[in-house]
Length: 213
Image 1: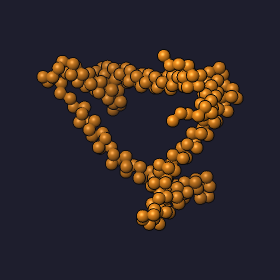
Image 2: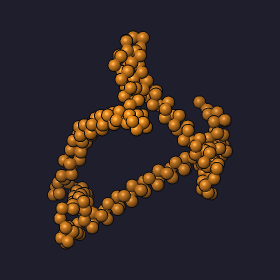
Image 3: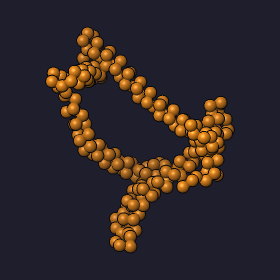
Image 4: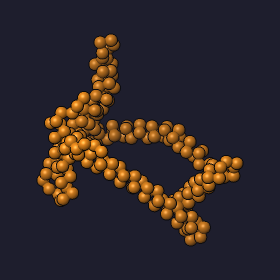
């Protein structure tokens, strides 16, 4: 299904308006920034209703033609409304009740999910260093072990860094962390460049109708 020309023109104008910030801060950019935030908020509300509230709250509460609803779901919006009492100083304790309940539920869920998620990582960190596998596999295991010990020693503060072996290991761990953070930052930059190239391709091929190479 082809996209309407009005939609393409609107998207192109919004894209150009957003990129006017490359020149300097200006009212055009601020206007389209507010348009983007408003559209994102509206889309988020729609997705929240269609993907979460409708199937997991309203339909179980109101029922369907094949089954009756459950009255207990009325407590869901009441619990959500309790959060807004935080704006009333006299009744803020009501909001603290529901916030405390959610903190407790979140802590329990995090604790129950900690072991299945991280226990496997702990056991996987024990790699054989002397095996009959290919040499590159053995080298990879040694690099993994050195990296793991060095990074962990950087966060080991129970012993003073005046110990020469610990200081050297911690310094190596710091450099390895910087390399890891650098790769993460590089992947973030590449992601932003991918978004920029996607908008440039939209302007050239969809809006200006330049033939693709």
